[in-house]
Amino acid sequence: MLWADLIELRQTLVSKIINIGIWLSCTIIVMGYIMKAQFALDPNFGFFMLAGCIATVGIFETYPRIFTLISDFEGDQVIFYDLTLPIPSKLVFIKKMLYLTLNFSIMGLFMLPLGKLFLLNQFNMMQVAWIKFVPFFILINAFYATFAFLVASFIPSLAQMEQVWIRFIFPLWFLGGFQYSWQTLHQISKEVSYVALCNPITYIMEGMRAIMLGQDGYLPFWLCLSVISVLAVASGWLAISRLKKRLDFV
Image 1 (cartoon, rainbow, N blue to C red):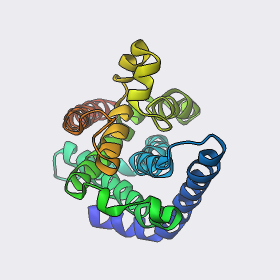
Image 2: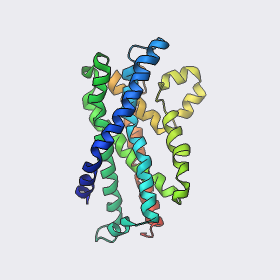
Image 3: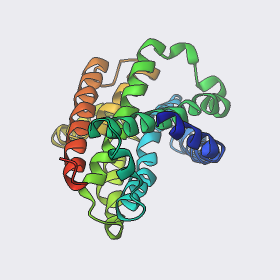
């Protein structure tokens, strides 16, 4: 089943790469060159933004995946065929989460050569802690995969899909440190910075930037890794439990 999903991904891969290229190029050009020059920002600000883009490309991919899940629940109900197979129902959901993890990871990997192309010497690849990058990158995309299923379990119908972006995805992303570090927020308001620690995207941003720009100035990498590991397992378990009840496979 997983192989069949990967074949389907291959059919849309080029289109997804183009979309990622457009988003990344707009972000890097505006933030890494124009805004940096206008406001005399840190010379590494473009690299700072690239790390944020790599860390969060998965969360933008969750929206269409949530839409597809809800649409299937209400429409063709293809997932019911998988659930009738002689395997535990939880394995069906785990398989789908693994597929999304691979999907999001493939999308994110294409940002590395694109980032080098746009940033040139600003992107020092020798500076990246690649041994930490690989497991953390896979882990955050696993979290996004379980997050997609968890959110889908709370959305009753397609009519409520507009809530997904404005109530879940946008606040997590925009308030998760995409354009600033947690340390900067802490200097401005300690109270708000502590609230930000309840946002999983904060740990994803901080962990990725600690990997790509160095530990100094960011939350400890191992703290970020530990928190996202726990959240990925917890959200996956809760999503499976809720969806089994919703689809009457208790």
